[in-house]
Length: 380
Image 1 (cartoon, rainbow, N blue to C red):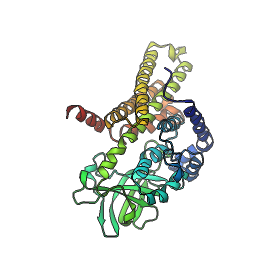
Image 2: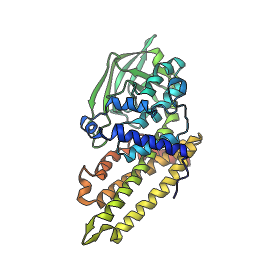
Image 3: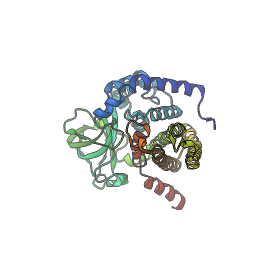
Image 4: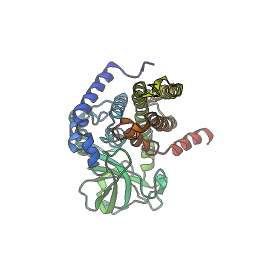
């Protein structure tokens, strides 16, 4: 089915993104995978190409474009290129809204130009060793010391954790914490007591630096409070729908691309004297995946269009996230199986897609959390 979502302007932008990936990402990606981190030069190149801060107002160096379909183009093309390590979606679509909607004028002028140029790489630190999807279990504390906050605690599984120059940290600012006692504090590179632990060794997305972060009596200036004191829970809930939609967009793009690769493979690969595609079981597998992808794509495109109009709610974002990521997981597994032994070789795209995509059902809220959100909306 021909997609109705994009205009000629979006498709022209898609060509820009593809050119960037060809010139600035593909030649270096294998080395980034070995290094466990992308080059900062890639972030600067993305800034020069106008791929950072698409929704940031022009006066701060951004694109001033609130049309989320451009973010969808980036998600789709980076996924098809097999390049999740350069986490533009995290930077633009997850962290960007916190800075544009919550920052004071002084904070915007201090942080957003670098955010858009690639000179400031960002991260958000929610997850802790003992608290994943449960924000109420956060233990990191920020004590009010009059002219500053004294921050103590640790975070883990933080994407961009090694490269980040600016980290939005979720911390308890009341003894009880929870829904009414969390705040967002911005910790900047070089602050005394802010330390990075290991660049964590993951099974996939090797080029995407994921780190442990430690805060030991970090003096955070009062002017680095982001949004309302004790208001983090509401701030986080407000922005999670976009984060989950972004993950879902990458998931359906990955599933579609794996289907394309596998369809081509089974046409060429022979077994028992004929192409695999001549076997009824193979045709049924391809037919099932193609149908599931088509149905999911229709729903995702509707969600993207709704979000671009400001109409997507948390429940439908949760539906999109759990369904698309679980589909990606199923398709990756089935496509690897259809590749046989070659599918297990890392030189084949399907093998890397299998390991790179496995995290999708976990971060941004697990599948189980998504179902709980949907269930509560229906059953109370």
